Structure formats: structure tokens, C-alpha cells
Image (cartoon, rainbow, N blue to C red; front, side, top):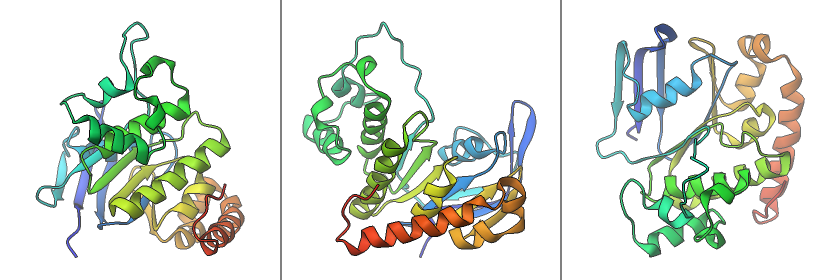
Length: 244
């Protein structure tokens, strides 16, 4: 199976400083990978490198030919005085058909927002619209940079459920940066822990037990992971009903 993205010996700089050193990683089709790490550990820079917005100073990034990437940024600066509807926003930077826009909004539960002003949306509504915009191009890989920042716990849980459904329907791979360790551990196939380099990576269970991870985040996540795994499996057994 050809990897969607492959990094070999990558060094990345941000503002003159090397923030990531010697990164090797692969993203396989259809998997959910979560990137965790303390502030300033290079998580956003890693996503920007995959997008092509940051060039590595060493190493090599290889992408599968024709790879389509959807991106949900950490925050979006919107001019409060700018009149723009959700429908118009989805037409940037290039116009898409009304049908395509409505299909993407429906997929993220935002179909009722087409004619609403972007500036009038709540945090949760805006996240749904940003996700819809990322899905318009039918991505092979969806990059999410702290997508639930500013959402309350039920809002976060709902968003992660939606991501899992999107992955199932579209078959796309997902790579997301998150601080919500207990949730992402349950939602991920694989976790990559960064702190200037890749400290540890593997299944959520493996990473939660790794000494490098525990040194950064303590041991509290292990119990939360078990709890969430149980709830997750329980929800799965009930024909995939929304749980959380």
C-alpha cells in the first residue's frame, strides 16, 4: 500500500529556530493519526510542511502523485465588517457548484447555515463550515489543527464523532493535532508524540505507556484511555450510534 505522505530525516524551522529535527513518518491511506506534544513542539509546523507551506531545511517529503489534501486551520481571522455568507465562503478560492457545497455542508451537519453570515456563527458552527470547506475537494488526506479549540466537551465529542464518520464515508486519512489527550487516544489508530523530534509513536496503548510520553504528560491518560476505549467499543456495539 503506497503511503500518502512519507517524511525522511526532516528538519523544520520556524522563525529562525529549528523546531523539528530528524522526523521520519508515513501516513497510510484511511488511517487516523493524532499528533500530540507540548506547546512549541512543532505540531503546527509539521502540518504546514505537509501542506507545502513550510519547506524542510533537511530531509525529504514525498507525497503520493495527485494527493488531494483538505485542511482545517487552528483559527481563522475573519474581518468582522466583511459581509460573507457561508455559501460564498465555500466558493473561495474557486467557485464550486451549489450542489457540491450543499453536499459538503450536509455531511458536516451544517446544511442550514448556507445563507448565514460567517461572522454570526458560533464556534461549533464555524468548525463544521471549515470542515465542510476542507471536504469539498474530496480529500485523500484531511489535516486538522486543534479543530476543537474553543468548543465545550460535548461539542468536542460531537466533532470527533463526525470526523470518524467522514473517514468512514470518504475513506480519507486524517491527521490531527490535539491537546485533548483522552479523546484523541480513543479516536486514533496511531499517535505521534512530538517534542522537537518524534519522542514516541505507535498505537494509543503503546504511546500511553511509553516513558517519553509519561515524562511529558504524566500517567493520568492511561486510565482515561481505558475508559474511553470501553465507551467507544460500547458505542460501536450499538450500531454506531452517536455516543458522547
